[in-house]
Image 1 (spheres, helix red, strand yellow):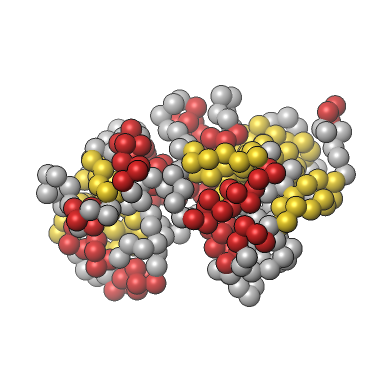
Image 2 (cartoon, rainbow, N blue to C red):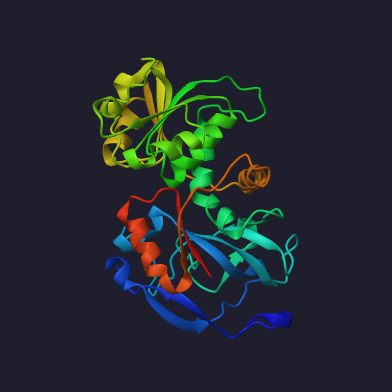
Length: 330
């Protein structure tokens, strides 16, 4: 379709036209290939990863303001640059890249997408589109949660005793690996079917969250945690607080209303809960890509779905039980 630099005039895309409806509301359409603003690149999409946030936007997270319908969902894409805008400086046609699209514009579930150069980075040789597409939201959120507790990756930081909840999910699976790279002692929680997987990516101890010990967040040594990184929106401050050491802190990347309130109420206490809202750093994304290239970090893939079966991928993500990342491959 794209041979000899010829760009088609139309493309297939998946979109929905209103709030709610789940996977059944996704429709395939043939629409014009996006035209570029001067600072944008056109990416021929090879892989896209679906995040829980994509599904929450469909459910009405930003209602009534966003998104504008009809809407092409999904922010995390990897592919090849097919065209560049007149003011693009660093990137060129043929570059293999990964991009974190602007969530209220999105556009990832399509054969082509226009992305600002400022949210797009070259992926190193040897890093697949699937591995790269998993990184932007989940990988960066995990990295920023660890940086929020002072984690260093150059060997200069101090090792802490930390707990990571929902460690088999997209964010959790990256967080476990990054925490081990920084020499933290890692206890992790997940469902029974994923205990071995979470151990295999580096956790020192894995708790089944449905057992009494898992529910109480108790590790075998009985040691309390310096930090808890919470990646599940059902975690509660009241459950975390008894497991923290005297100056312990919860870093919550999926705050529910109760934990949001706790983050304000604990500002002046010894034990604290703080929330991390993702801010995208391109340097951070390059750092993660380099770790993948070096074999120090991997994208745990729940499932890969062809573009024709994007609705199945959406359904899997909506279920809330994906192990790692749900990927759509073009």
